[in-house]
Length: 360
Image (cartoon, rainbow, N blue to C red):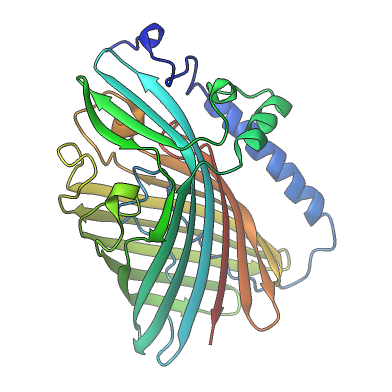
C-alpha cells in the first residue's frame, strides 16, 4: 500500500524515516577513523584482551518490552564464582509514518538501567537474574541529535520540525487508537531469570573457542501501560559462540548467537504481536592491548508484530552497535557503545550504552 503522507495530521510530520544505509555507513567510517587514530599509539605485544559481546539490545519502546536476549556471550561463570553487571542504555526515539489505514508516532526517550548477576552452580552450569529499572520521558537529546544530523548532512526525518523533548507514543489503525502513551513514568521493568551451560570451551596460548546454550524466562513484573513491560511472560533459548585468536598484533575475535523467542499474549497491541520470533547477533572485535578492545556488532530479530504495513511494526529490526571495552585494575570491564537503526524505524535513532562488569 502506498504511503499517504499528505494526509498526515500535525502530530505526524512529513518527510521522516528516510535514512539510507549509506548514511549509517558514513557514521561508521567516522568512528573507525577515530579508532585508527587512537590505535596508532603503541600496540602492545601478545595482548590477551577477551572479545565479548555488547550486553545490549533493541531499545525501541515497542520492542524492548519483550524478552529479547540481553546476554549473547558464550562464557559461563566458573563454579562458586559470581559475575555482576550494571548496564545503562539511553535511547532517543523518533519516527512518524502514516498510510490510509495506519498512523504511528514514536517520539520520546528511554533510560534503562539493569542489574544482572550470574552464579556458577556446577562445572559448566550457571544461573542468573536481571532486574531492570526504566524511565520513559521526553528527555533532552533532541537538540543534540538534530545538531549531529546537521553537522554530517544527514536527513532529519521530521525530527527538527517536531516539538522538542516530547513524549508521545501513538498508534492508530482503521480509526481505532491501539496505543497512546503521553505521560512520563519510571519503575521496575520485566525481571528475567537466566541459565546457561557450556558445550565447548578450549583455550591455549594462541586461541580461545567457546560454545554455550543459554536460556531465559522474562516475567511480567513491569507496568505495561507505561511500556515498562509487555504484560506477558516470554521464554528465550539461544546458542552462543565465540572464537578468539591471539598474536603479536593483539587479540582478534568473532562472536555470534542464534535462537528463538516464545512470547505469551501480553497487553501491548495484544491482537497484533506474534508469539514467536527468531533472534540473532554477529560481532567482530580487535584488542590491540590487554586493556582495550574495539568492536562492531549487529543485533537482529524477526518482526514482533503482524497485521501492519508500517516498518515500525512489520519490518525485521536490525541494530548496529559500535564501540569498545576498557579493562581496569581489579578485573573491571567497561563496555562503551553507540547503537542506531540499520533497518530504519525498527530501533531508536541513537542509543548510548555503558556496561560495567566484574567477576569474583
